[in-house]
Length: 611
Image (cartoon, rainbow, N blue to C red; front, side, top):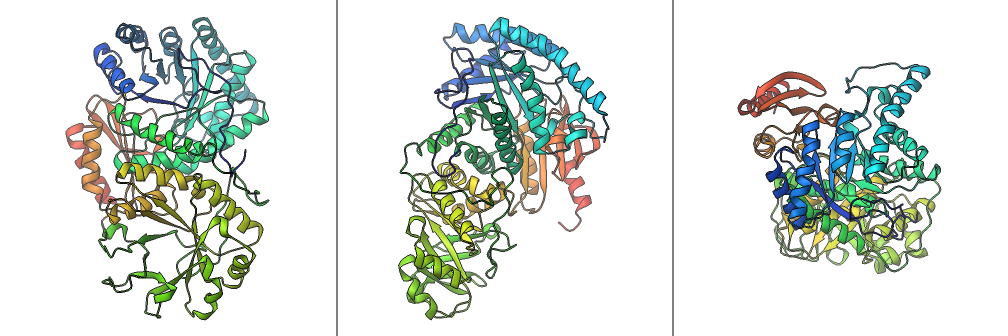
């Protein structure tokens, strides 16, 4: 893999109805219905809306035999209307359902965590080597007949591992780790290979983007070590809705797409399924703009670990670098000082507009030509002005540095002046590649100045800005290179929204928290309460909080597991019933939906009296 120049990973071809995956096929876009799979008319209508929006696969939950059998009627309903979209059955807990679904769907998703293994209990169980081997044999005995059915019916499968549903068996041997998630997938994949079944797609998902990115990177490495090149389905589970869902998805999925990984994606939003498709389409199209970009020279630093990167060691300067949280710089050269108090930037760059009205206690950056040692104001230099830096006594300085302008003089200047914070710029179509090349060069040359990534856009649409900016810096965050962000937009969007986007990116990358984080699933046919309404009510009551993670889950499939690092959980327990969790512990069961949000707020308040 070339970390600096975009090229798509070459995966084997998987046949899924009339829309093959992998190889030279396009990156496919998909979504999942949230209708009851027993409701043929509703499922057909929603599948049509997904396809009309641009979806290329449609997944439906099949929690029982009846749902699996009704895929036949849904398929007939779609084909009779001229829709040839492949259908994907989503199976959990019952392998018999997978056997039936394989007769009527073009692809069946199975979850290794609950295909044969008992439902996760979150108890510490010990397995001897013999017991572990016996469990694997049990999987083989149940899985091979399913593969035989799939072969006979030309049905593809997806081995879909979720962070929230690893089995107790895997947990006992590997713990709740990326290595455990990969092994959970590989156990099933090795059986497929041994049985010469090759129409297999793989996915490993998590609501934690750091876990998701690291695990997919590791999966690809392990597959290549074993001579396997199966295509990948990418997604961030329980990403949420609105700007949070878009930023989180673009950050995680975009980081992998940018490295050429991924053959189909689903952006999981807690919204109507068809709303996911345009977001996914924008993300894929934006990343693919990097194809054929000008060559970026770069060499990977020896100490860099792509699978488990550590934060780059930097010299702290004021509140930048070192062990400090990444900063946010905002450009306000036009004098518009509108600020959202929740997302107040750490520094405001005003260029030469020195006469703007100052906000109390705010830090400012001005061009060196107008800097006069005013308190809380720091000089900025461009790469042609390094000879003047010695004359400025400021304890903190900023250097705007286009990546490709780095030379020996600038390198010497940075080594001499640890008080300089680099604001890295690029006009390359592949922002990521050029920024990576700069940071790897810094690693090799032992340059420890903090680096803030400057990202320039000209967007009038908030969603476009959120998707593009998150996709551009995701891998840089996961690589451990981000000491700060400076997202600058030339379009008409208010600067406070641009600031919120920068803070949202840092939070989605798990490196700085500025608001409550919501882990919410998109819903499916298993969801038996009004998920979107519940999310809106929970957000309205808790949006002012800063350091909490609240999970709102439609059902138990990934509920407690995907909420592993959430503080509180709101999980569907049955028709119109909700159970509440504190961490992974269920504290109240089967609450009527009408009362559940109020009960959740009571639970939060009782454990956080100061909020």
